[in-house]
Amino acid sequence: MRAVQVMGYGDVDQLQTVTQPVPEPKKDEVLIQVKACAINNTEIWMREGAYGTGAKSGWRPEGVQFPRTPGSDITGIVVKTGEAVDDGMIGKSVVLFPFTSSGADGEEQYADDMAFIGSEYDGGYADYVVWPAALCFDMPLPDFTESAVFSVSGLTAWHMAEQLQIQPGETVVVTGANGGVGSLNVQIAARVFGAKVIAIVGDLTMADSLKALGATHVCSYRSEHLADEILSVTGGPVDAVLDVVGDALFATSLKVLKKGGKFCTSGSAGGQKTELDFRTLYLKHITLFGSVLGTREEFRRMLHAIAAGTIQPVIDRTFPLTQAREAQTYFKKAGKLGKVVLLPEA
Image 1: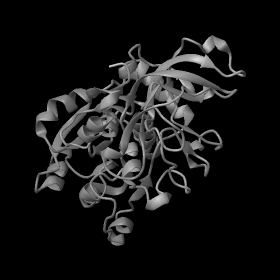
Image 2: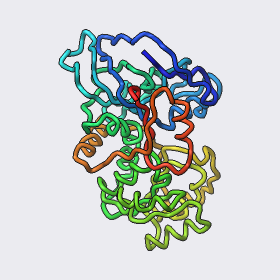
Image 3: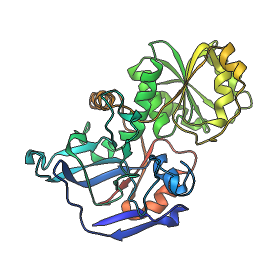
Image 4: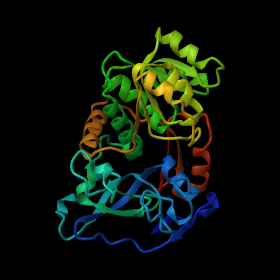
């Protein structure tokens, strides 16, 4: 089979297309023919070493072991089962829950042994992948590409909203609202939890598209008076911020939050370090949350909402698997709306 592997830390030239044997499923695993694999920031940062330095960069303390096949948002067809798996799974169209863990139900992502497909396991930049049968779920939509855009981004966005316990009618700022997580933050906060969403993007030509996803207002981070604009359109401070940007909008986020407001971040595309005046934090009684991924039960709830049409896929562009370098380069460009997806059969 073909696989695109990361050979080491560095630029996209570290992505190499190789030919290797099709993997054999272990007794509790299934072999999946990959039909679509969406791109996430996590495989970019893994390649670039953004999670740490040297051999210590990865989701686990020991770091990534190269070469590694990235890719965690995977849909496909089960074509073979391990000896302990019911062969009735063969032929099923599935979407993969993206990590293993010994954590208790509801705390899976906190376990020290949490291991991520595409980082600790070979992932979906390939024709085939093996994965535990128990972590393969029925696709929420009949289309492989559309069903592939939710696993990591959607689970992360869903968990962020549940952590903040967003209530109907609350006002929520969503930064990076045109990205994979951000566009789902808009939909989940507005359509599932009933919030009024202020979407923050760079290009206001996206405003109509984001309002169609559920945003009440759309503002540009390029504005010199962004905080004042947010406070103006909302009529006062906001209840919560769902952030994927980090430093670039951190001060603005704290400024527009009400007393007792909540800030949740799951990314730092606009800067991984920031300055914090603790007086702002305690005088406004602000609660800070760090968030990534979520639980299997949250994954099930998300898939149900997708199947019901409450949350919709947002896809910017697809690439064939052999153009993984071009796809990752395109992924990092500003101005996209939604996900970028690799298609092995394209």
